[in-house]
Image 1 (cartoon, rainbow, N blue to C red):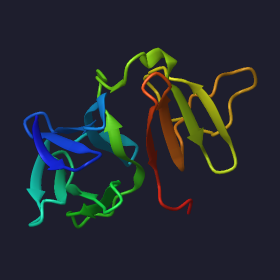
Image 2 (cartoon, helix red, strand yellow):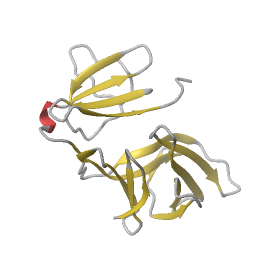
Image 3 (cartoon, rainbow, N blue to C red):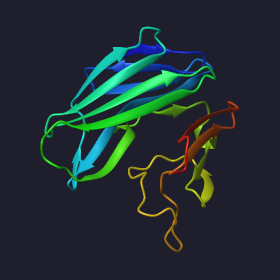
Length: 188
């Protein structure tokens, strides 16, 4: 992987041949989230990108990832930028290049590929995840599951919550005293 964007808190590495990117932190040396890409569900069918083109800004404070989906005429452009506070921001734009109308069912802006190679610090088993879904939130142990997206924010009676956050997701490693916050700037 090649480092495409580097800041005080985050390094973004891109692997063009694998159509993926990864996230590291100089402040949290044992944290690695990799390989990441995106995904779409259009007309009930799942699409994954086959190619990524990478561009950088003049000031090296942003990169642009252009994801192409060969089966359909759609391009997802994502701009990753570092702000003055040290946050990593993601802006996405989906463009339909065909003349046909499409039914967009689902967009995965950030998708962890299989097999996940993410590491959230030393003693990862002691890490906790805080998930918020508007009016419902909970804390759980970190366990990787194949299906991180649920149909509902509420668990089935007697069942375990297995959904992803709609607003905010925080993983905290108690051994490292470090955490990673991923979320949207607005609930709307």
